Image (cartoon, rainbow, N blue to C red; front, top):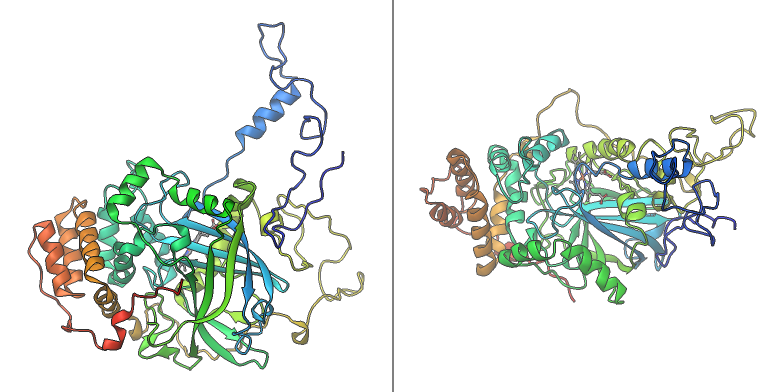
Length: 538
Ligand code: HEM
């Protein structure tokens, strides 16, 4: 029987590709040779030894020996689902992206993840969650590779290996930081106070979501929309779960980790199997694309800052429904390769120095994780737009390229007629004037404020939520062996909020230090008091 055709990955209903797997009535070798016995190796007599000539045994064992691939260097633990995104058309005036025009339906694949744990780690640890979406659009694949927290630890991607090394297990014992020795993590975030904002969100209930289905998602960075007239608008992406935003409490999270480490993975798969398809609205906050890229005093290129929704409301632009579970975890959830540089016409990046480094890192890591440069041909990564590139050969090449001249212009293969001009829907790099005339490594002064938004977030929480934050800091810092690290983190909290600092200090049995920066007694603007309350309409 002929092998089944390889379909493009993920049909609009979410059905995955079935690349020549398990077709036909007979068990065969990888070469299609029918097998009579796969349970006994070929031996010299019934008591052996086994003969080297047993080609089936060798194929079976050799393939098994190579079944594993490296796990992701971060976000190794995850769960995925297929679905569909339907756009409202409300962003059509600010972006020419075809999938954001009115009532366009686009197949998607989503992968949720934790950040620090390894592939087999538990789901309900206190951590940031990844929220990545692959939109298989007619104009090429667009990836929105976000998190469930709107800010990030660091302002410049050159420090990403450092924060991850500080958070990952210690090299000697390989005991995960999430549950035991905490010194390196707290050492890093107390020495790099730009990380205080993200850490506060981690210590809040957002760090222990009830379910992947009840998480918000954030693009974190500011991106740029370009409309049909070439006008640009800066945007921040938000996913709002129609299921509402819900968290666990710490004791629940701990017990669940022990009793059902696959809690989030199971919850997502069970809900989809039962037909309770989770939905998220996609929305954008929009900002004028001004020369300094600031909004209400907030530097839009600083990924440790968010823009309160009271200052820039989130405008819904479409809805995503997850309606099919993966058929094969490895083929789909493990091999999917997201990349913030997978863009479509109408959406571009900005100069956020964290985003700029990400643009390098994802392709680079995937070349080693997925065994060479051709992983875009793996079914889950295949674009649904026609592909006609000049990339050739390489490990695991699946395509049989024709023609003699993979370059352009050429005078042999019809001159390579496939280069699209601007008028036929090509991606355009938005021309941008660069301010810098000198090379330098320092941050702009607008990146210097590390505390005011941490305070804003903390003071926006309800009394119960604040208590949870205090308990989380006390518990986590209580795991630090080094007193000096606990004291340095308390000094950072003193610059956030005196009551918070005093409560954590009391829990740790240490004196509360004085603030070294000015801490206002109340929020600068009462309008911002609801800043953390981004609950969607259910
Ligand atoms: C995964 C690097 C910041 C969200 C990854 C991976 C790398 C990486 C190497 C593994 C990718 C793979 O093996 O396929 C970086 C670097 C960063 C950075 C260098 C900073 C410069 C961020 C930020 C976010 C984020 C700010 C959120 C906005 C994710 C997510 C995944 C991921 C969601 C998992 C993707 C998946 O499900 O396969 N990152 N990252 N990362 N990153 Fe980042």
